[in-house]
Length: 153
Picture 1 (tube, helix red, strand yellow):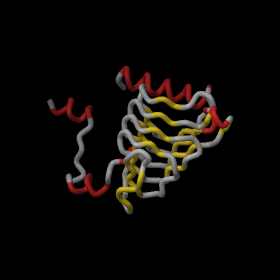
Picture 2 (cartoon, helix red, strand yellow):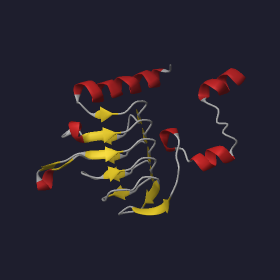
Picture 3 (cartoon, helix red, strand yellow):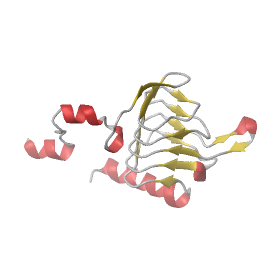
């Protein structure tokens, strides 16, 4: 495992054990993502979801003195600089586009984009980390990992 991978694993351990966040199996959160530390137990992220850099997930609203749970389903992708507002529920197998501001619940199997985020595509199926299944299958299901690329050279 790379040094970066070990740092990410330590970060996830800290989020789970020290802050009490509910993070599913095989979740990946960028080191530059910002997850709510004011109400960390209100953050719930499902299995095999990826949270990209500079995205923000809120579980509190200081102006309304509100601490509320925020849910992100399994096999989702949260794009760079996306903002998930407190109390929002993002369903399973969703993609939140980069820069989207999610203010309302997102139904499962959807792609949302914009400010405020709106559903731009429904009925999508995603694999681990929010990879679109149809695109993966169209590419022959062959995606080399860094380890496989290194072994090939």
